[in-house]
Length: 253
Ligand SMILES: NC(=O)c1ccc[n+]([C@@H]2O[C@H](COP(=O)([O-])OP(=O)(O)OC[C@H]3O[C@@H](n4cnc5c(N)ncnc54)[C@H](OP(=O)(O)O)[C@@H]3O)[C@@H](O)[C@H]2O)c1
Image 1 (cartoon, rainbow, N blue to C red):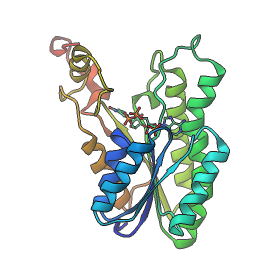
Image 2: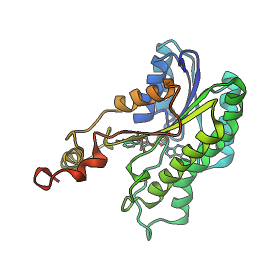
Image 3: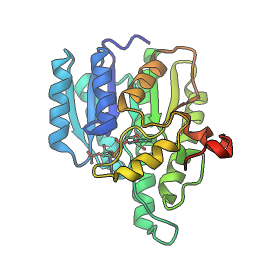
Image 4: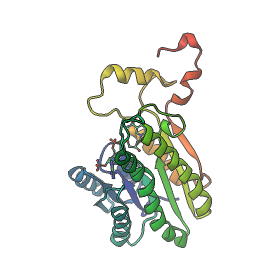
């Protein structure tokens, strides 16, 4: 896929990793729908930065856990550009809650954003991609997709369900629309994340360090451009998933 001139919708594209993905796509020549939920000002700034890269961009809001808002987002995006060729689903509430702490509201909100909102976007926007004969979808997963993550129950289950959706959509939408996932490791700590925790997490990777949002951007661009990859999950995690296999004496955590 040649990204120049394509229209990409990036969920959670106003801030942090989603913003880096949006601007990476803009630098590659893709026009942008920058979705946001609460970060309205940041979304406008990201729009301005995208336009400075010579593409057209618009910011559109939605609580993706609300099916009406997700549907309205898909329709507004198509109305604005006439089509959407690429979806990157990065939006993801990061709610720490064990089973007893996970209220039905938390459960619905987290799975609503991760799974239901993306399902609605894909259902609305992929018929156009199929009709035009080309489309690309990338979803941002994390280690909770594959391993139980204590205290992040809804998050972990939601990411797992999203990975299931990736594989199902890859099968259903082939050969026109390719659907893939990326599994970042630690690439951007939350604001005010304690330094000792950052160091501990760095040591939990084989490479012994944090990555950078740009590592995820490169993977997104690679998967969108790679015409023979679909239904795949690409780990961009510094070897985090294999760190437990290090010889005991070499482990620092
Ligand atoms: N940071 C890392 O090191 C890391 C590591 C592994 C995987 N990831 C994955 O990379 C992606 C981005 O990570 P991040 O750290 O940049 O995320 P983040 O800072 O926690 O940002 C969360 C994003 O989700 C959006 N969001 C939250 N609730 C929403 C709702 N109800 N409806 C719609 N959007 C909602 C937010 O939009 P608003 O700000 O507009 O409200 C924001 O864009 C996520 O999928 C995350 O799981 C990140």
